[in-house]
Length: 84
Image (tube, rainbow, N blue to C red; front, side, top):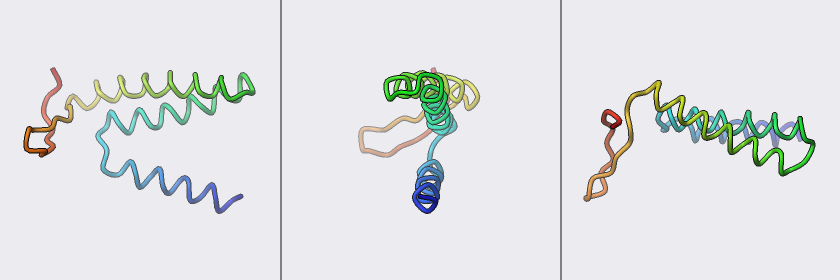
């Protein structure tokens, strides 16, 4: 069980390495919200609602903190610029 948790944590850390601040905040918010929702309600529905609320809240906070958004040009190239 310990090795499974370690692999899960490493996968999340590796996935966050290339993300913007908003995406990183959304991921952390969803994980924290899911854990809190599961602890408070004790069921999967509470965990799902907590993850949703935490993810949205984390994204919005991260978007404001970063001030940059991710865009894709018609040729597929990704670039970052100031958010509207």
